[in-house]
Amino acid sequence: MAGLTVIVILTFLVILTIFLGVRIVPQGYKHVVQRLGKYHRTLNPGLNFVLPYLDAIAHKVITKDISMDIPTQEVITRDNAVIMTNALAFINVIDPQKAVYGVDDYRFAIVNLIQTSLRSIVGEMDLDDALSSREMIKSKLKAAISDDVSAWGIVVKTVEIQDIKPSPTMQQAMEKQASAERSRRAAITEAEGLKVAAILKAEGAKEAQIQEAEGKLEASRRDAEAKIIMAEASREAIKRVSDAIGERHLPAVYLLGERYVDAMKQLAASPNSKIIALPGDIVKSIQGILGGK
Image 1 (tube, rainbow, N blue to C red):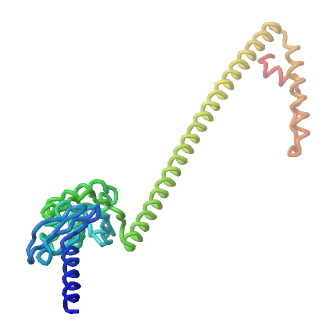
Image 2 (image 1 turned 180 degrees about the vertical axis):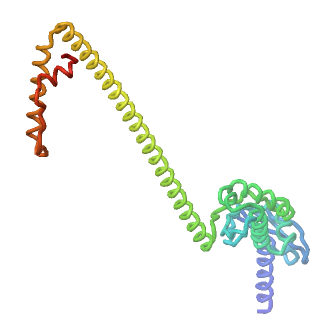
Image 3 (image 1 turned 30 degrees about the vertical axis):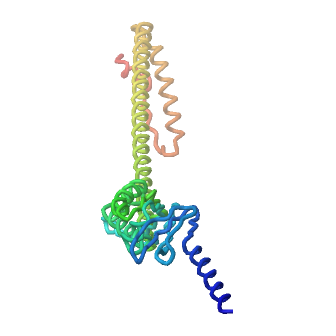
């Protein structure tokens, strides 16, 4: 029985020794080996052998690209505006030894480094530039952290700005400002419309006055021409009558007497006429008008 117990113990120790001496590393990982508490070597994916009892797997490091969510934080811009921003970083560990021994927690360190650099970059920009310059922020952020991260055996593949927007209080202020700006533009547009309408109205009135003046001028000209024509006609008629009458007053007396009688009739028909004075000798009166004796 004692011999069997020893055999079982030895068998167990052999199996344990083999188990401790053989290490299978999966693809996408690297294992950091310490020998007696000191870094010894790094195991690549596949079958590896180590010294049992002396070597120990201290760290298992992922060599695949690692995505890291950068929490949302408040950032104050150069013009004292508060914006909310977060990011997403992709890193790759190329030297596990530096990653595990160069910093206590490389994930935590990178997150804080990106947050700090992001605050610094955005803090040097105005609000409008920060909201519209994601690519520039991304480029500056990657350049700012690459040197520090490379000392830890890590490569920053890319840093994407997930969201960058004003804080809720700032959004309300911007909405009020935008509303005020729209109201101002509407007032300016309305004022310009009224100004144009007033100018057009004044121009229309001026044009109407010019046309009216031209119409009156044309009417006056035509009236003057008509009076001239009538005067010429009267002169010609008087001349012809004078040539026809000559020294004979009787026809002229007859014509003027007839006109005189018609005028008296019209004067008598007027409701305002009360007394009509007639000369005693109409013929002599007409002859006197003609200058006859």
